[in-house]
Amino acid sequence: MLPSPPTKGTPVPPKRKIELPDHVRTALLENVALTHHAATSADELDKIQIYLALEQGATTREVADRLGVSQPTIVTWSRAGKEALARREKERADRSRDDLDRSEELLSNGS
Image 1 (cartoon, rainbow, N blue to C red):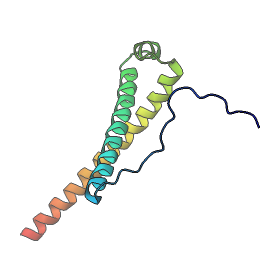
Image 2 (tube, rainbow, N blue to C red):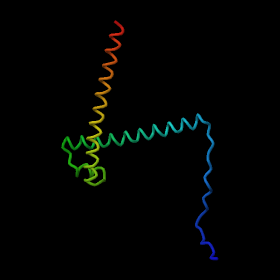
Image 3 (cartoon, rainbow, N blue to C red):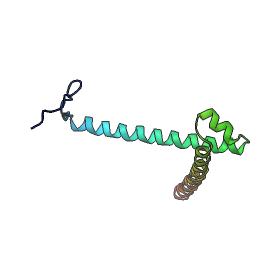
Image 4 (spheres, helix red, strand yellow):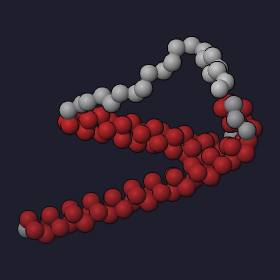
């Protein structure tokens, strides 16, 4: 039998599960979800801003140089930004329509 090769450094101990009370675990998972949503929303907002910058006359080269990425990446992000902006505008219009419907319902019930 061959000897085991020498290992470098200190061996990593096995992971231990940290026991947390249910309410702490629930709060932690909710925080993870909120953080993820905020990061996703910020990423989407960046892409919308790239789209708007190009619509206002900035070139893909200018934006790419500023951000340190390739021009094809800017084109991809701009397309995603255009789609995200359209989706947000539709969601906003839907919410406004729902709010108007609720207002009309409240007014008709309150008369």
